[in-house]
Image 1 (cartoon, rainbow, N blue to C red):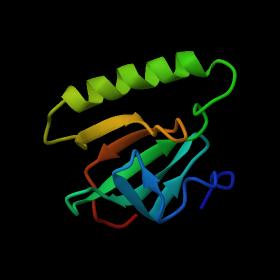
Image 2: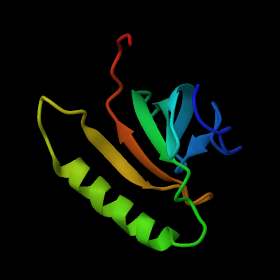
Image 3: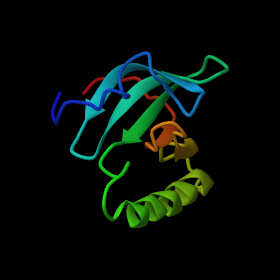
Image 4: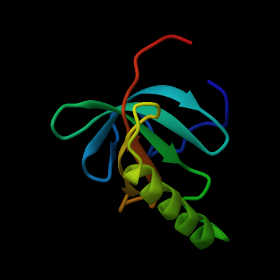
Length: 107
C-alpha cells in the first residue's frame, strides 16, 4: 500500500465511532485510508478515515469543510455514484470518517 504508516488507532479490528469495526485495508493515500468495515447490523461497508485533519494547527477549518462536504454527500442520491450512509468524527480520536457502499470488483 502507498502512503505513510497508518495511525495506531486505524488498524483492522479497531472500532470507529463505537459502531463500525474495521476489516481489511482497501487503499491508502496521503490524507487517509479506506477499509472494509462491518456496521452494527452486520452489513459490510466501506469506511474512509481521514488522518491528516484529525488534529493540529488549522484543523478546525478542515473539520468544518469535511462536515459540509460529508453532509452534502449524504443528501445526494443517484445510481451513478457511491452512496454515503454515515459520517462524523470518532469521539475517542477525533478521526473524521465516511461510511459508504462497499463495491466488489478488481482493479
